[in-house]
Each structure stands twice: as structure tokens, then as C-alpha cells.
Image (cartoon, rainbow, N blue to C red; front, side, top):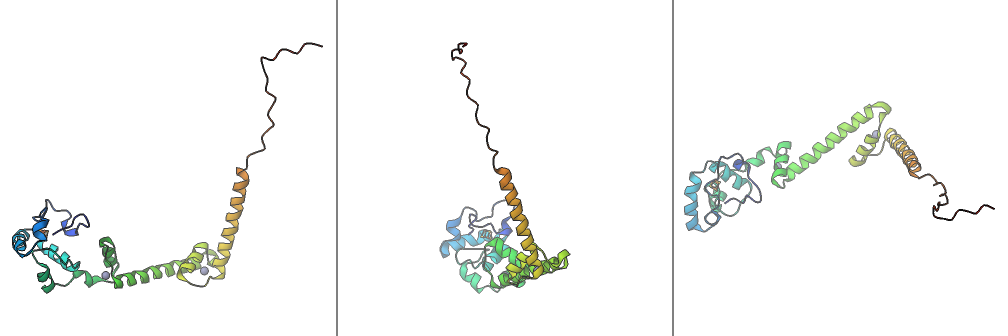
Length: 194
Ligand code: SF4
Ligand SMILES: [Zn+2]
Ligand SMILES: [Zn+2]
């Protein structure tokens, strides 16, 4: 039973044609009698192994997947392969793509992000001036006290920004318009000469 509208399992991508269960939801989610009809179709499916593994990994509770009923999947000795590399960046990205929650992967990713920010902050401190505006923001997201050099850099940047804004505002003020001249009425009678 495949719900292609929600998610396309990777094992279906690149297949030359539809799998035997395509369009047959009623027998793939039906009762035992219908399961007996579904299983032979799975048996000749080119992705049967991967389909069953997918259902186990995603804890699919209903329907026939990879030729197995829900009970057969629960009893299966196959373990979720996804758990093997949990904690790695690859596993984290896979969970994201599949919309899955995984606490070990989320914690490991948070550690990686923090380490990356700390590494970037060290580079900012090693640069000219011993600190920078980026360093200030990195200290902020890392919850660290601001160092004097980064503080100075953000103050300078803020002062420069204000000066620039002020000159932009002044440049945007329109010049005082010239007073309009009296309109000339071409049809007015000519002034009689005195
Ligand atoms: S193994 Fe069965 S349920 Fe899975 S894709 Fe193939 S036919 Fe469909
Ligand atoms: Zn994980
Ligand atoms: Zn700093």
C-alpha cells in the first residue's frame, strides 16, 4: 500500500514503470483475504525488499508492504537500518527529507552547528582588529559575553550606518520649488497705450 501523495519512498524513484500495487489500494489495505491477493503481487515486485524495509523503518502500521502484513512486519527480525547511522549528518539530512523526528540526530546537529559557529568566531578574532561585526553576532547566538574588539566593531558599523542613512535622507529631500510665474493669457485684450 503506497500513499504517493504524501511521500515518494526513494526506492520508487527511477523505476521504469508502476509497481504491481499501483491503483490497488483496496487490496493492499484490506482484510486477510485481500492480503492473500496482495502478497503474490509483491512477490513479483522489483522493489519488494526495499519496500518492506521502508515500512519497518517508518513503522507503517497498516496495509501490505513488501509482501508483509503488519503482524509479519512486527515479527520481522529486520531492524530499522536508519538507526545505524543516527547521529551523523547524513542521517540528519535523511530524517529532514522524510519529515521524521529523531532526538539523537537533532542533538548531534545542534552540536555541529555550535562547533561551526565557534570555529567561525575564532577566525573573526584572529582577523584584523581582533574582532568584527560578524564576531559580535556570533557571540550573540552562542550566548557568549561580547569581547571588547567585537563590541567596538559593532559600534563603528552602527555609527557608519547612521551617517549613511542621514546623508541618504538629506539627498532625498526635494529642492524648494521656484515660485510659479503668472500665467500668460493670450486672449486678454492688449493694454491700451497710455
Ligand atoms: S512490494 Fe508490494 S507494496 Fe511494495 S511496491 Fe511492490 S507491490 Fe507495492
Ligand atoms: Zn536519527
Ligand atoms: Zn569577539
